[in-house]
Image (cartoon, rainbow, N blue to C red; front, side, top):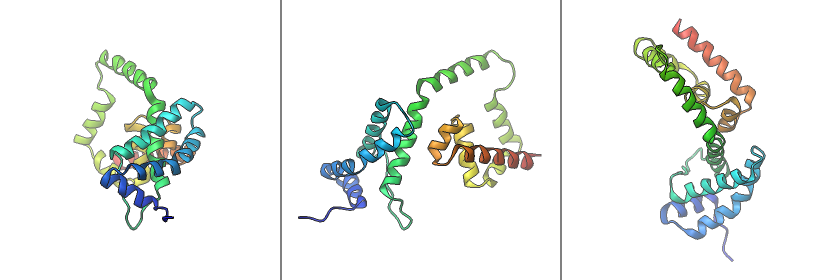
Length: 183
């Protein structure tokens, strides 16, 4: 009887040689766990099943790369990050795209500068870029998720793996620091 391969060994075999048996073993180990964890965040079993399949498809196709180094995360954490991001994408789906289309249609009929134009003007003529760089990585990540990616507080919390209250607090701190830096 052979010794079971570690998660790292399975992932290396999948990445290097497209080892189907290694992939099947990784799937057997983690698909039920990932499904259960995602179902605690989404009641739609069909969406969750699709997200689990997309997660493992990304691993198989190599579009998701596992980096094993001295501070290596475990495979479960890595798969969770892929799955949770794909779940957020699935939940945003057409609803978010529809809201974006409506917002853009409203903006087309205005003579005032769009939010994007105002931000770009701030980058060009102000020190917004410098102020953003001076924010901590945690605060920048919240701004990226909520402002740039347009996620709700709840979606950002899922994506970043932190409580929704923490997202709100970090967003408030980031806005305050930016106001102070740009004043």
